[in-house]
Length: 487
Figure 1 (tube, rainbow, N blue to C red):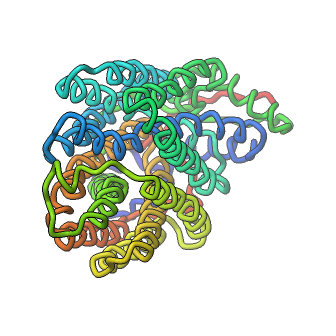
Figure 2 (cartoon, helix red, strand yellow):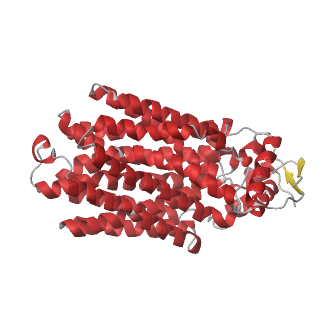
Figure 3 (cartoon, rainbow, N blue to C red):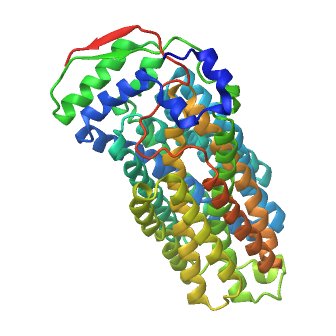
């Protein structure tokens, strides 16, 4: 029996959400075409291209853990002013993420991704030239606005992936983030003692410009092209995928979606996505607060370790430059993202997305509580290593789940809003890691542990498990308009 879109809306929560979303033959048919083209040379090349965008994003984010402590001493800032440098980046990120998502749904994933990269480069260079604290705040805010568009690399990448390879491919893509973060710490270790923070900021922005020159080899998503009515362009992209992957052509009917409005914010909170969206915002908030928290607290924990918990003078004890040992330990904890990626890679298909998220958040909460009672430097490094591995893995699974659960018509917007809520958590975390932690490490770490457990609970309450599920094109039924692919 055929169900009309009106009937689907009226059913609301009386039917299983997953079953409701599966009743779409356009999404399923297009998914079968992408599945038949497989994972081959085309996707491998796209992995490295999108990985470049991800590495650049990581460099800009990792920069925050270095530039704040330096300006604290050089410009005689208070701990609140230091924390605000990080917060404004995430404020810009929170504002920009839904805007870039809307832009990617309306005008294409490619345009949104490249525009945001150029914005990041331009204002990154201006930040390096900043003459005062005010200009650092202004330029880092706009830089954060630009960085937020990098999340659309995951949207674009996921829409080229067959079901069997999608989860592990997106998890593997996150390895480029870890590479970028590790490279930034090594770059800081080389540049900071000799050239200073301005050169570090400038060098960190240059890869964004390099990525913009990859414009011609970045494809547009065939799912976006079909949903926006650009049929011939979509067929051309699919032809290129088949040619690169050495797949034989075959005839297949694709029911094209009706020409509806794309990128509507209120679709995120309408049935059957209401509960999913609210829980995803909670998960992304928790993941970002924990991930950026562990990044920012790492140098603070080592500084307090050198100075002693009893001293709290900003320009006395706390204002200490990072030593070679500190940089080495930061590199070690940054490298933890690689085993975190491997762990997520192994469990995301075995346990499913929901259980993988819950397990990683819960274990991270346990290790954060253990960090409270640990004062020795080596065990502290091991626990920080474990927490960062687990939280980075949870972030990776969240990036897998989010594009899978939303349809093409507002997939980029859904990811953008999740990124925006993540940055609300990231805006709060500098005040926990850089202001509260030096005063009371027990209170700060307890708050982080509770946030971690809250993320795990939200994951288990998600109503949809997307493991093995074909990506959806719309949340309504399709018209019977057809196009024939001639392979």
